[in-house]
Length: 138
Image 1: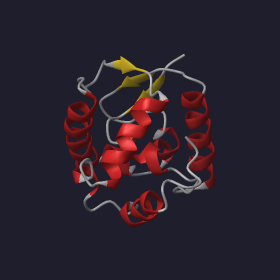
Image 2: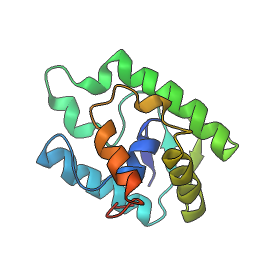
Image 3: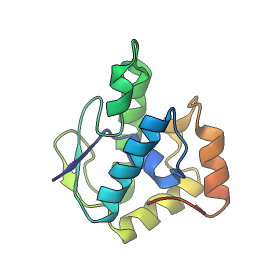
Image 4: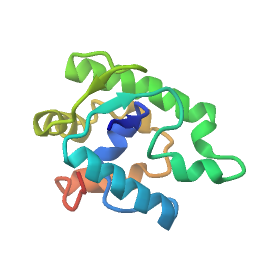
């Protein structure tokens, strides 16, 4: 199997501590994180992904908004530069411990946070990063 992720969720995964939009969203997110933790590869997609799935049942899911696509573009640019590889639809790779450590270090330093500007979760993510990523689930 492969975990389908939009680019900005590569950043969200770094600080995920079990909080989310709804119990269904959080349960699904936990499942996705479990799959990644077991070494399942990532497939970068354009638009809604496996994390967004529970939100797609809402009348106007935010994952279909232009702002989500803009976050994807910024995250793809920054994470791609950091990892030295393209992060675009169709790319496949494994999020190994080394990649996650590099991504967290850059996130803490603010080098990959452009996509986070204006996000309602930004303060929580900053607090998690400030704690050394304590209690993250991946």
